[in-house]
Length: 126
Picture 1 (cartoon, rainbow, N blue to C red):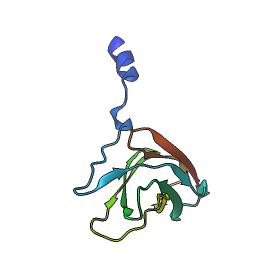
Picture 2 (picture 1 turned 180 degrees about the vertical axis):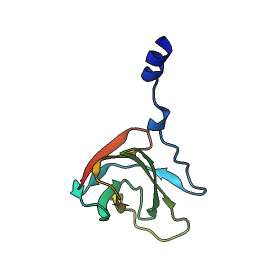
Picture 3 (picture 1 turned 135 degrees about the horizontal axis):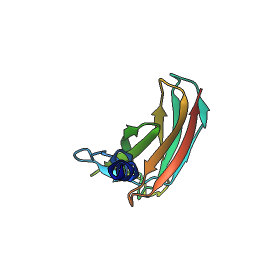
């Protein structure tokens, strides 16, 4: 009986992400996420993800995600162009993250920042 109680209190390791950084890219910081909070099954919902830059040569090339039940962990990856003429403007990049679900429910998207804190965005799929 005691074993069953202790097992029920263990932390579920599926709450952590296993997103691996792609070769040649860096994990980009996220400063803000904006977009719809609801949608329909099979619809593509597009969220605007804002990332800081140090120049016009910075870019986001892909988002990688890891889904655990109704929580989706997301990291932005990109890099900085080398040997290219770029502006010196440090304006945020706005990248588009696409989300679609084949089932109804409440979804929590956690955009993981470089310091491992998260920006959460909640979606209701009907």
